[in-house]
Picture 1: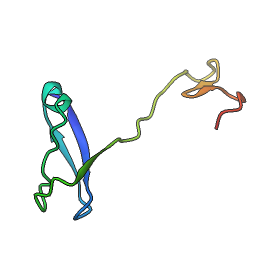
Picture 2 (picture 1 turned 120 degrees about the vertical axis):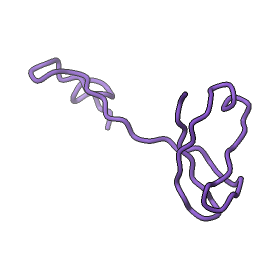
Picture 3 (picture 1 turned 30 degrees about the vertical axis):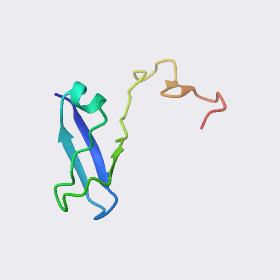
Picture 4 (picture 1 turned 90 degrees about the horizontal axis):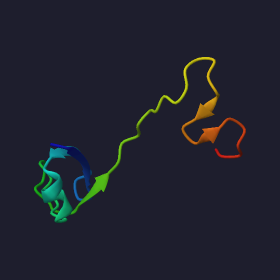
Length: 70
């Protein structure tokens, strides 16, 4: 079952909830475990991506080195 990260706008608490994809797709927002508010928003965590071994092509997660993307 996937885990989803949320942030409560009322008490500024970050929390994680495990729920099925079908429950998530209905748009149901979980209550904050600290204050029970439904004024929550989904947040996304940063993920590290390894794209090439040492001595590889030099391509990064956003494209080749020097491609103009930053």
